Amino acid sequence: MELIFLTPARMVLHRPKLLRFIQSYGEGRITHRGIRWLKSIEAEEGEKPGTLFLIAKENHQLAGFFAVLDYGRKESLIVVHPKYRNQGLGRRMIEESLIKLGRFYGRVALDNLPSLHMVFGLGMVGFKLTKGPTGKPTLWVGIGQWRREDVQ
Image (cartoon, rainbow, N blue to C red; front, side, top):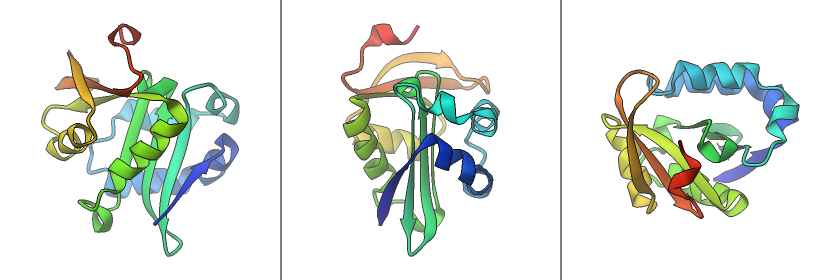
């Protein structure tokens, strides 16, 4: 499995394919807000600290996509093709991204058991319960050099 960090310009170039991938394999768990962000982001915004785009490829096929805005405080999403789930790919993408970012925040709906399993398996710490964008109870999680004060 090959992991490739995309420059913001390359992400914008591949945006249609990435959006189709999310639509096909996100199982409705990616928020409309997250999808709107990806649809509207310009390359300049992608250059800001704490923003990255990572894809996983296997035999020239897209296997996973991970995107982060402002270390995950504003937006983060991860989608793994069903063929590659339960093989540690999501975990590996977050670990590789953490090396670049130093810290990472995410929000996981409490009914999203696969994602909760992944983030806690990584050693992420749940630190704040909120109502998510869809109205569901949602847990803020952090890893690396995170600070509770970074999330208001």
